[in-house]
Length: 216
Image 1 (cartoon, one colour):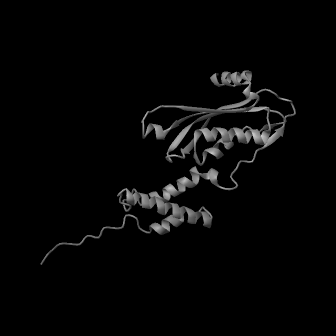
Image 2: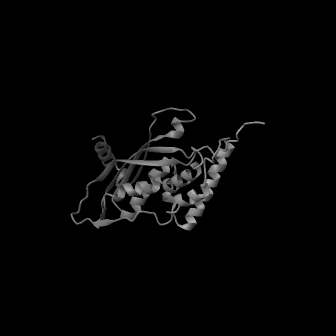
């Protein structure tokens, strides 16, 4: 008679469906269903890569990625456009208002890998001035979606130009792209610079003032 003993290996991902529901409980029902569908597609990709989705390190990756996308692509949600708080320019301020070195993170629309860097944003008031905290929020709103750096630069510029009707707007963005550093040419440390201008910044004097402030 054999003395061998059958060993039962516990499921490394027990009650996964219930845990997924718990981890998405913060979202409304319609969005929760959409995130579960995204998680299903992520799970399919993992299977196509011949990965063991029952590995304890992978069994919840699908739902983690779905939740990450909900955060990273928040700018696509209806109603998330920032409300612009503007104030009368009672002092008649006509010089440049500039916020520089505003950090941001976004996802490349071509490969869905991150690009990140800093934006430098300036405008010259006409009738109104904007609450300073709104400028980084405008950048973040447009960054939180699959993006191109060129398009991001134009969208921030156009938004400020449309909402404030200033004398002019200038935006410069400097960013590193992991689609350049991790794949393809694999050139680490490359920085891409884009710019967009409206109004009075088409004049050389205003552009040079912007660049001079940027250097200091």
